[in-house]
Image (cartoon, rainbow, N blue to C red):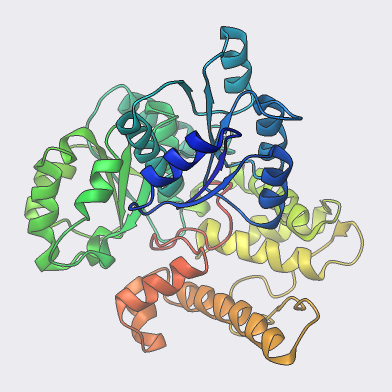
Length: 418
């Protein structure tokens, strides 16, 4: 974890740096806020810890500029002179906490431990779009709100690509919107079960176990014990499973008390065009171009299709269409679906040495090949791993390296719609 420390008093800056010397924090300590901004422009940091009174710029102004550069940056404000209005303004700008000087180093490290959990398992964006015009999704929304009023574990059952993980994030937001949220592929759990350190950092938050039908028999027992443990009892547990998947007996006793069915896209025709327009806007922003609009012919084509790949298939189709679209109107979706005949679309690398450019292109190609393999396997991690000649753990790591969600069938594109 990378931490940027901004403190103009040399002795205190050295003290805080030394306190973190034997931890997993990589600290860059500076005295000048302008130097801090240059560091933020040159690299990304997980956490910013800054004093309020700094030479040439206040800590509040530094926070304002830092958050513009890195909107997800976690921030701690320190001060011996902080007035309530300064603290309120810092929180309005996105600060996570305020430390009045002098403070105990143990309290400082405890605060960083909490921020590490938020960095490693960030709470979902409360403004993440949630489209529920169809009767099937309205019924699910009612069920989610009822579930949010309880602490019961929840299992989401549905087809690959239907948006089970998106529904879990929705439930988390309804329950505890500022707490950490982590999605963990059940297939990646070994006989040791979940990492106790991860569970400790998730206390007060939610843990979603995706693809529970792929959980190995050797991992079921340790997972059940972890759920009953001290940290596990302070976590809101959720799971996802496909339509015919079955839970191990130990897990069924702990997770099976409330099961919610996630409707397929075929059951959500009333949501289809709204979803498509949302995805068009997102894809256009990623490409740095104005958002196109749908002609009636394209709308009819979307509504007539059966969507075996659910929302994931729609996202990939929209992303590919925007990439090759000419003009502002989309009249049709060529090659509707995720077939092998779909073109492999690779971005041009930044100019540089040949080996460096080839490495960038290969990385982009690997991401698309992994996504296609998941699509052809219907989101089944086991099938995809077997087809690619990889172990489940290796496939999961490759997906993580490319920021492709590990849930069976969840979207391989940025998570913005169910």
